Amino acid sequence: MIVVEVDGFQFNFTDALHAFVFDEKDSSKPTFHGVAMKGVDIVAEFEEAYIFIELKDYDDPSIYDVLGGTSNEEQKLRQDSFKWLKNYLKYKFRDSYLYRHAEEKVEKPVHYVCLITFDNALNTRMQKALKQELPVGKASRRWVRSLATSCQVVNLDKWNKNFPKWPVTRLAAATEGA
Image (cartoon, rainbow, N blue to C red; front, side, top):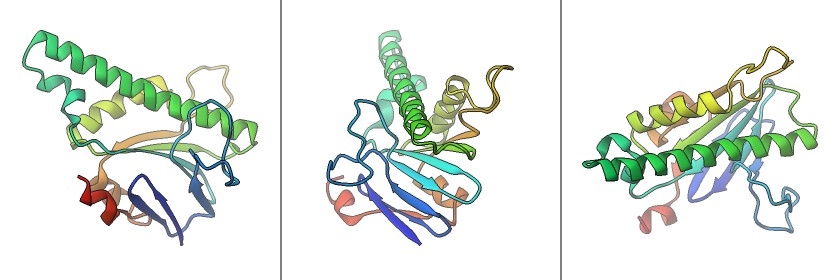
């Protein structure tokens, strides 16, 4: 089992060949990039695929929930926030894909999973928007391979339900400040 701790969460990968903090901040670590591009939080390698994992833990997700806006102005602000987050997640994937391409580490299918502490409905809207822009599958008939084979946006409960071989727990230190 490979254990990875990042941003107050612990991931346990029971069947991974390799898993590590990809967006490493410590320049003394071998996984530090030192290039001004974005990176997903974790990359896990399995026999058949790579998984790019991005984690976002929000105390108040309402600023991204367009449907919860009570006025046109509030809906516009929330739509702008939702769009900003969608683009941020999109570029985290794309830059990570470029990093891994430069490392010659995209020879297997790449799956993108965002663990976001939103409710299921808001995560579903984010997943739909991300799938269109990554793009998932072959976007052009000229492409030989896809960038992202799949994209999922889940919260902690759904992660543990969908991926029982890779359980995630919130670390105690992370819950004390919440």
